[in-house]
Length: 263
Image 1: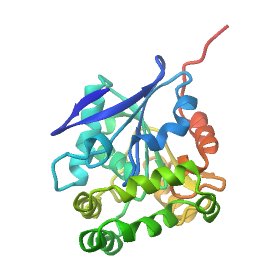
Image 2: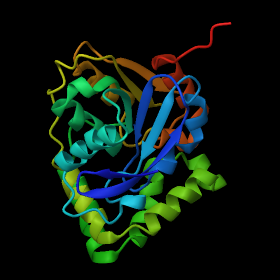
Image 3: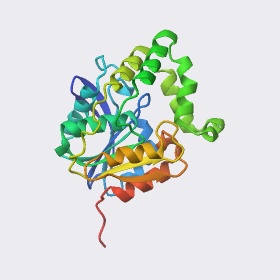
Image 4: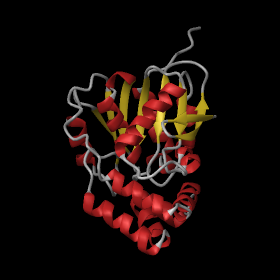
């Protein structure tokens, strides 16, 4: 479905007809299809929604510059458009950073928060370098290094469906938008600001994540109010859903409540 989010339109994929609402927020450079491998599993006893973040997919024409504040406001606007007063929110990488930004601004809209390989502090030098490369050389020199951060060597060698999808997304990304998103990501401002977060939280660390280590995710979990649960997804790289979807779905299924049929 097409919905209005702040100053642009985006597309939402929906699965499930009853139960608690779950909103999924994708990684930088991909789109809502990143969640396709886990949607059907999560939609058993839940209503699950995945949308395109501004600058990505169907929302590629959203106004620039990209800012974390605007992306966080978009998340709340998506909840409003879907008529969801509260939802369980899960975000991977940039998606998790956006979820944290929205959680700082509007904690009452969150039934829970799940972070998959998501930072709570930016890395300005690395983010600026990725922006600069796109501006000066286009997307081609970014494809290989990005995929190497996102996937295991085995998945890259096998050229899996997930790798092919991610490659197409990065290769076709608009360089100006890519640069703006990375610079906006550098404005992430949530560190130590979720200590009072009132809802349950889960940090999912990929065992093979080249971007954020297990220890790094454990530290992020410790900085969330009440102490988020930490779980390690066996064998998972940074883009967990595209290489270890069953394990990710298992972890989310254990954490998220669902409406259960009673015989």
